Image (cartoon, rainbow over all chains, first blue to last red; front, side, top):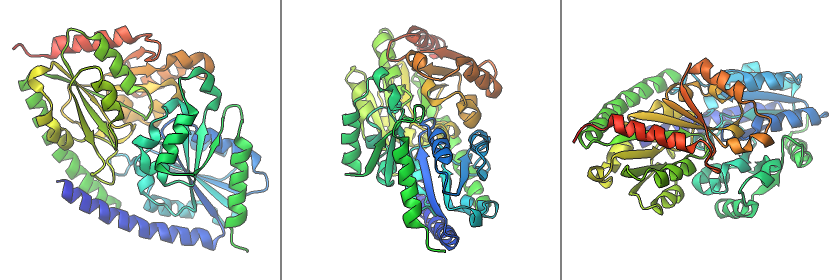
Length: 226
Length: 226
């Protein structure tokens, strides 16, 4: 049974990559930089996105929200007056635990690509499968909350290995946790040596300016001249 | 593509249920009660299991650990001198994000079923797919950390709906969070009205006695007479 499943998996992943390239071409054509934001449930993706949507005044931002069900995060971000498109993964493979390239492709007509410079995609909260599926993004960012423990890079190595930036969130809680930041960084370097990382608190705003500047830099470098 | 995927999914889930029933029969035959423990990454499953393994003196416990990679949790629990079996889901569908019945079936010969009364299965940290796959368990318990926010039942309804007990963990952090317990309970009742729930702190031990007694009760009622 396993062998069959692996063969199906390879077929699905190949098809996914083809569609992801088509998405990427469409984004490039419109000069839109795309950042795929991933994390475990409740690590603070939405709040970190709210922070930068508020702060990045001179960048035209759009948001694509991936959730199994509901539109809670989409509603929060839409209230900041940016175009938000919702994908519910519920009708997929028993409630898909990730976005795939085809879902993003189906959402493209609902995204005003001519009116934005940066598309922030909030993936489904999950540390496994989202890392497997390219969706046409330029950059991958993952959020790791200090409440989750120092061992997460070792337990979910692909997720930590696949991203260009790791946001270590909820550092305002450090005084109240048995959490060793150095141990997390050691484990992070074990699976993805030297990957860019920032210590942030979505709640207090600490470190958020750096995260905002990183996004602004990606947009500045990434958008093709009009 | 979606329609094909759904058909494959139904086939996989049907096959899974058949194997889960076979697992269940084997557990019943040996008088072993099986509890499947699920949560998001870092919600505190392992620490909550450590607590009860230490406290349940008169119950013979075995542990089955599901992880994408590594044996960190298995090592922690093995140090408490209970038989621990590790399943790594890495060779599966691009690193499986859940345990399925077939993985548990493959592990059965490594589990000393004649020497235990209770098998605690720690599933892969994920709020989506583990809820889809029965593995032969008698009871499902999920752990929801208060650091994850009050909206999780609405965003991952199947997970909250499928379990018989919800452990609301890390309540020692409540004074440091913007978290409304009543709002969580309201959302929980919206998706699974009246489901049994306990407020616990794996770290301080608060509420752990209740969780231990729940397990002891399940074993007492669930084991067929020898």
